[in-house]
Length: 166
Image (cartoon, rainbow, N blue to C red):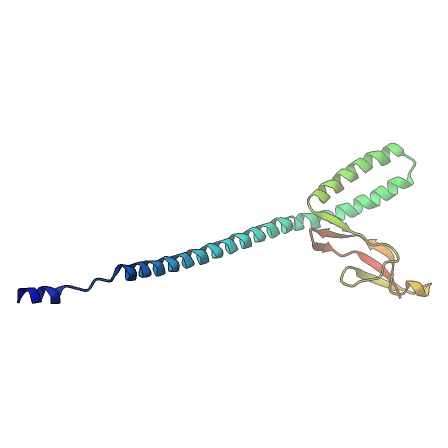
């Protein structure tokens, strides 16, 4: 009877194949969890890097906006100096003017190029007034640029203010 008791109390242990199969399933589950966690971390890292880059690009927008009236004044002053006959005065001011504009340009500020005769685009220009066109070819086109427009990176800081022929 003692031999019968030993067999009935003995628990059935899983075979080696079952253990290997179970361990492989656990390993695959852990690999999947790891890959998902790694992909989620990579997405987080890329997103924060992009947000940081966007922040750096636009962080100086307030300062650049505050400097725009100074650039306008410098443009007007340069035009007035060019009317004078004092070449030394013109050269000296042009050095300061160019240095100032180079600093702004190196920090991402660029001029929105607008020429007289360009077609008016409400997405890119701000029409401050309309005048009667002297030539039918000029209808809907820019006849004067009153104020220069500026971009900071790809963001428009100030739209160019123009006069449009009607």
